[in-house]
Image (cartoon, rainbow, N blue to C red):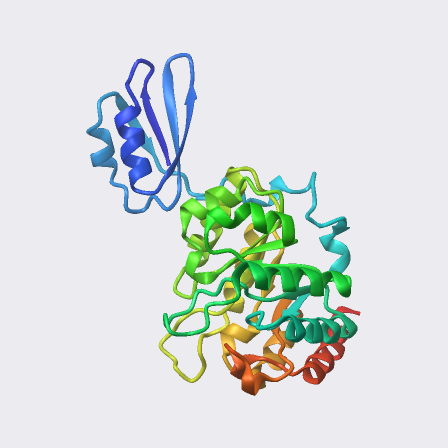
Length: 327
């Protein structure tokens, strides 16, 4: 949305009110007017209410809500993970346990997923759990276990951040910083991560539209970080047969809008390890740029998400199967 004001209009009140409602505002002053570019989902902003502010001349609704995730922005600087171009690692495979439970556990899993061909090791150290009584993670100790295990087998380290105060620690010890589904619209966190020097893996919220997901990516990019990977991880629908419904429509639509890489997390979509192989094949065949798969050496005793975790041998079998789609 673009709000046009008189050149001598006072914009402070309007800016403050828009910021309070969660919008990002950019100001451009011309010779005879001021333009306020309002970033975010502006469908609920009424033009009549905006025209009531002093100095407002016109309110223009733009058809395209995206300014930064559009396809033309990234041709000059393709995404790199560490020193490696992302394009040379397709399909980009992230694998590992839901949570880092111990040093021994994460080292064993790292060895297995690396030998099967994964590029990155995932493992939660700060765990956002639905129940406050569930395992909450080993926090910084767990993150260090993940870092050392990844280094031992030449893998990138991927872990989810919960608090922007932990960002310096994550930047030092993690190669890809994950924003989980529950934090997809944590705008203060997104703004902070926009200043980060590491790629961001942005998961889609399980009750969010594709537009809301892409607008969250806008926050990251407009605050300075163009190294963003989108991750479709299933959405909540009326069907309770599986945990969520994998939205390949949404994945493909996102790929039409942007050149940001879009990967798929079939483990969280299914909630059942028996479905992960089929969903993985379907995702790669449909055009996903990679996968994020939960792997555990003993799912029955996993501290979290054991039911959706593949054993290492099954993961190795899956890696051989999806190779058919990428040759």
